Length: 277
Image 1 (cartoon, rainbow, N blue to C red):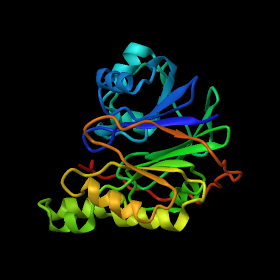
Image 2 (image 1 turned 30 degrees about the horizontal axis):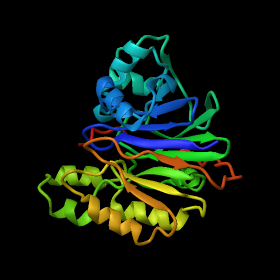
Image 3 (image 1 turned 30 degrees about the vertical axis):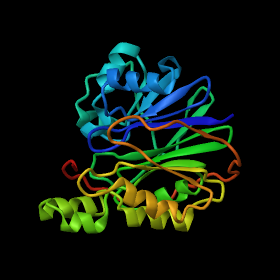
């Protein structure tokens, strides 16, 4: 069984990623309104009635803005850790709030969703890999650096939403204050184009068919620049730049499946800082 994937929005103005098959789907993060999400899904021919759950990576507003609307309208289960729920101040019923733990799969129909910890300036940040019949899709955004958790799970993915937040030279020469530049480029900030490319070149499995370059900064990156950076080295892997202004085309992910399972690395230390912009 193949998986359909798309970015419904990707950037500091809102993040929402769709992964599903013909019968069930999940959203990773809900950073745009419920109404806008519905509208974009309709334009792509995706059905809201097969979305069975929403998984929340961390509490920053660009990842949770639409959660309360979804919970109220569709009564969908929201998978969110207790620290993230506490710091998010989301008002959702206890009946709909479901906790999860790193490396303990959550089964949603024929989908299996596995969370793992990462470096980011949030209370309890996680990224996710979603698997169906051996096809694995990862959502790897808001990552300060490619730690062992990131690398181990990256190697299992047939397709991935990979953060390419900023071009290092554009950030350095841009108008942001020094303290914000340091936060963005720090170990609990975001991945630069260079860091993401190094991860891709060093650890891309032969069966990775799609990479959605994601969470691009409006001020410190350029879609054409990062597309050319990856496309020139991608080989047979399809490179797509996820838009911060609307939905991105749906991709069908199938093909060779991975027989390996990511092992749990030693947990990485975290520190909580202020929200990144």
